[in-house]
Length: 71
Image 1 (tube, one colour):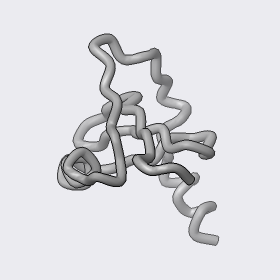
Image 2 (cartoon, one colour; image 1 turned 60 degrees about the vertical axis):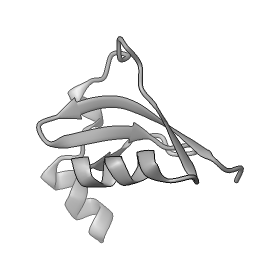
Image 3 (cartoon, one colour; image 1 turned 180 degrees about the vertical axis):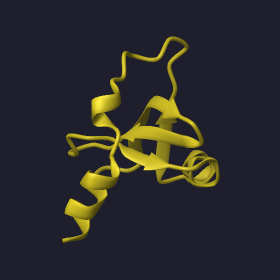
């Protein structure tokens, strides 16, 4: 994979931020601290839009989704 890796900030829900990671169908969810680490890293570029694209709640991981991931 090429570096820097481009991450796109696609939404926020409460204290979590959704980042579109190349090759993944659903975004990854990170807190403010991890988002700042991505921004400060030379290995990643976080793309932020002035008007973020539409982001539906269906893409947010629910507790059911989390339990499916762990199995």
